[in-house]
Image (cartoon, rainbow, N blue to C red; front, top):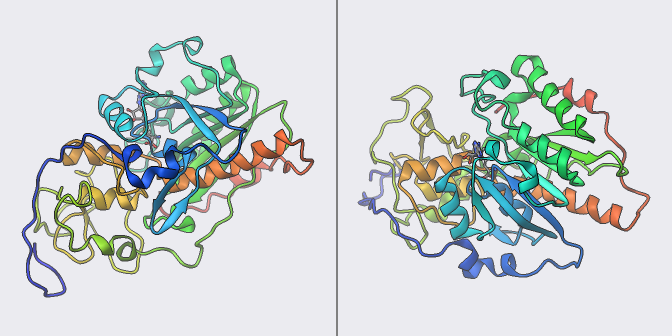
Length: 376
Ligand SMILES: C[S@@+](CC[C@H](N)C(=O)[O-])C[C@H]1O[C@@H](n2cnc3c(N)ncnc32)[C@H](O)[C@@H]1O
């Protein structure tokens, strides 16, 4: 593999890895496995759980980019997705709470109650890189399974997640409709429009978190404060220690893309990453947009993509490159999930203690009328 800095070439290995255990069995996961430092644990049901990015964020107890993301007071009691690849990856890394089922064919009364409902409902029909058919698309109405769960079980808090482009699609009408449907189930919702690099994610990724509080509860969780506003973490800082690793001493790092000498710019939407800048958005469909290393004349490895999504290195992906990339690109970065979950945990603490400082309900309309968006 040719290097841009003139050092000798190295030969890439392209083994299909075999993993019998993942993150939850690793040394790194010590604090993941330990009980949260409080007795007040909120139970969570996770819909559209994917490989578990958002779930790991809610759980906490992981380490990435030299930062510890503390264990949070949440317990995932059940996670659902209809993909077998998600099932295998989730169980390998997070636990057996996962059930592989089609949520559109499952009645809410077959699912357990919980304090918190989370779900990154499918985004293809809302994404700027998809058909943009919105609620008219065949996956555009999948959010309704979350609404049905809310209407039946009335969890205290709901967190939906989707792409930033949902804010702009059809002049915001799709988002308004989703929020209205959610609120009709007995909730007040706000939208947190978060840009990953502002929280230390070394990747350009903007996500909307639709945060809902049941109508009988006071106040509202506080939107997370930006931590890295003028000091975004560059791709080279995030991946530097992987530069000389070409084996499985770090899982999935030997899994290079097919072409080690692919030329950036050859296909529509190809992106050459640059030192000192955040990486381009990691997409689920890597065929559409190819990302190149900032130093090598090759595409990013599966591990490098997972790292840019803030998965800890012991979180393994057991399939071929494209299948792994699809799981990684679809995921909510655990780091962003953790930032949001932290605010929810703080709010639940305050209402449990009947703390009068429970925050005010925000003026949602003001926020939605101000969609200052760059990357989606
Ligand atoms: C955007 S991904 C969710 C990613 C996940 N939140 C994470 O952080 O890793 C959407 C997920 O919805 C799942 N899905 C799509 N249709 C479904 C259905 N009818 N029933 C259950 N899951 C479905 C897909 O398999 C996909 O994993």
